[in-house]
Image 1 (cartoon, helix red, strand yellow):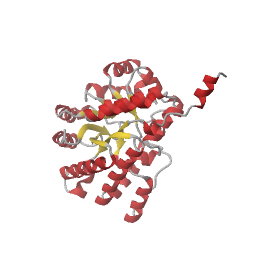
Image 2: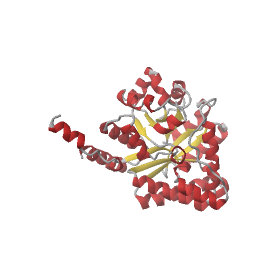
Image 3: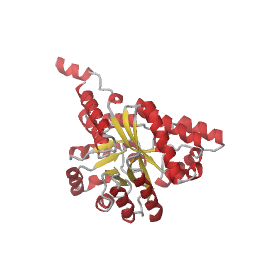
Image 4: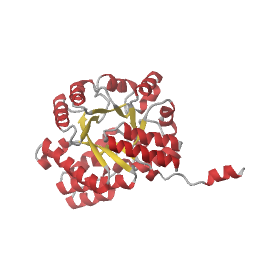
Length: 337
């Protein structure tokens, strides 16, 4: 072994917490700290068990509904906001695009509009406090009605430029294609919002194509099953559509067979832009920093690839131009360190 080789092997790894990054695939309720959730549940007399494995996506949904009961109390919701943004700051997140569902909090705040305004005010205050820029992705439930989706799209459009940056589409893909929500996403796009639906998690490439062709997606949340269709991969790369990938969630919910078959590296090598995200940390375990560590140590991403993912998480987001400029400089400096 040469001295140069020995020096390289003993050199410390770059600190991933110092890498400026965006968190684009994070459902806000599930960003709650496990200890905080248990404290809140005990105070409210509600029993919540955080599962260690998920036999089916419906198990995940049932646990999520239990969390919403705890967070329906105003002070609990505001605590969630502040602690989740503090957690972002600690892990090097300079921009977070939280999946927000104001429809969950109508009974708490009085109306959809009042719920959204409470969210925006709380996020703005905590974002300034912790030095993290926040955008909200209003999230449509694909298992609900077209009318409910259109109502949320109009609400999101009314707050474009005032903290709302994108319209998402979530919940179980199986049996719920995206096409029926074309009008909702047209409303959002007309208002200048990003189209950011879930697709290609539990269903295959056809659902990703539908998100592209019908919803005119700017980003795809998950999208990992695109990797089985070379033509689709080539299209994603050519069009610069970012996949907001969540490695651990993909494994636990059986979107992929295991970390050994996760296609993140393959997608990156094919030129597809990808961001790295945690999805639902309180349920799946890892935070976004943990997911960057998993991507480095388990999936084998190089620091250059990690930096590319970090830049995609900023450049493909609803972040302000000034934030994009400062984050780009920070990522470049991180690679040069």
